[in-house]
Length: 251
Ligand code: PGA
Image (cartoon, rainbow, N blue to C red):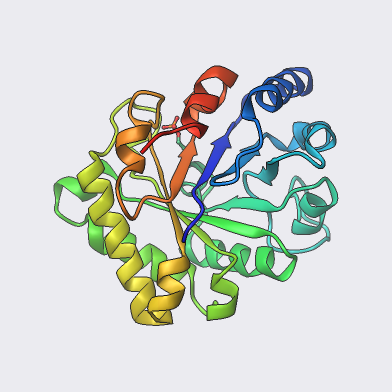
């Protein structure tokens, strides 16, 4: 039985005050869900303030990225230790915007994944193909390659901490969602690849989130698919009302 994980990726939005306001509103509406897990990933500057409000509540805190070293002369970087220190239990790794604008490679993703696991953070590893890749019929190959490279040398025991997010790049921030059927097909492929490498038990317990224009009006259909175990939500996580509706999906 996989507990769906509904995560808000706030990207480069929200000052400290705005983040606190959103966290308060989410806490007011979230209740005490037992059949789903809720996570927010504010920008670095708002993590500490958000973490203080979230302590002891049903909403978990995560970072949007990190560097793989615990500390050192790495100007501008944030470490897994620092994320833990402010209350994070999750971290997003290899988001397509990191890959596209900041040069994160599969090798860096793999290094970050190992660092997250070594420091007790649960990594959400993002994978997904671009529009030209999908149009060329390469979507599966691209995603499978990203999954394999990102998980290099990760053990079956460590896999219990890992979440994978399938986020087709053409669906991110575009309003252009993958159909539930297309998403399901890719999630099943990812689970098969994990099964081939780690065995069926590990694959069956792996949570695979879908991301890319998840909204209140499409979340129910997406979550009804058997291999979709939650959502990684950008735009629609920035307002309490829409994110709470997504959290309260009915399938
Ligand atoms: P979106 O972003 O929901 O705004 O499409 C999703 C993501 O990038 O994680």
